[in-house]
Amino acid sequence: MRKKIVAGNWKMNKTMDEAVALTSEIVNMAKDEVRNDAQVILCPPALYLTTIQKYITDLPNFAIAAQNVSDKLSGAYTGEISAVMLQSIGIKYVLIGHSERRQYFNEDNALLAEKVNISLAHGISPIFCCGESLNQRQNEDYIGFVKNQLTESLFHLSEEQLLNIVIAYEPIWAIGTGMTASAEQAQEMHAALRAHIASKYGQEVADNISILYGGSVSAASAPELFQAPDIDGGLVGGACLKSRDFTEIIKAR
Ligand code: PEP
Image 1 (cartoon, rainbow, N blue to C red):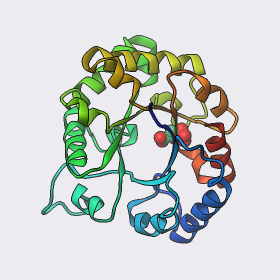
Image 2: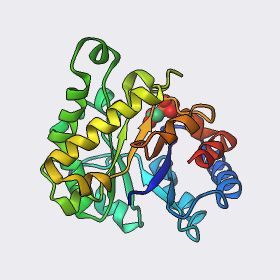
Image 3: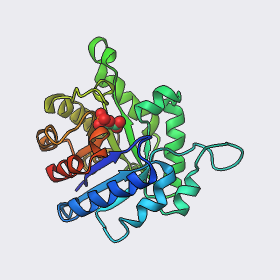
């Protein structure tokens, strides 16, 4: 069955000292709270990946994710980080398709498909983010919009490749706004995305893909969200920067 996952996206926050302090606090508070079938994923800035990794090496339920990867293999791409580089330091997950990357760096579905391909080719599982804007939710077929994000960036994959993807549904209107989607709103989308996957890959594959919810998840909102049948955990932004809040969210899973 699919994994239960709580991932924390630190974005562009924390100095090295703060990053180390946050990691050791989370590890100390949460290491005995993570159930056997669950995974905690920390997504620090790239500069800290190898340092943070040392704190979780003996903890099988903890992993590290990069926040980004280049769609190019190597070469003259100043400032970029390749999948080969991430693989060479043992990174197992990468965030792909976060709405901030889509919005500020013009990453579209076709480019994201390339990033997915290059990550999988180097043994790195994409945490593929998708989600609609408030305008789309109010005026358009918002479920169709998010389904299409999956179709265009993931549905060229083989069944075996798809099983290495984690999906994170993150409605843009809920990210960093304090406006969490209700458990009903999130469940509606998660069930629709799972059905969409089943229509292409079959129910068994769909039942094995973890679909996380992201968007202002807090210690208060996590328990209800995580009880919904198609919500397999969370991708957490703001609340993962505080060890106590993040640990409470881990416990809710
Ligand atoms: C995110 O950016 O992935 C996120 C979910 O942020 P927040 O929890 O702060 O809304």
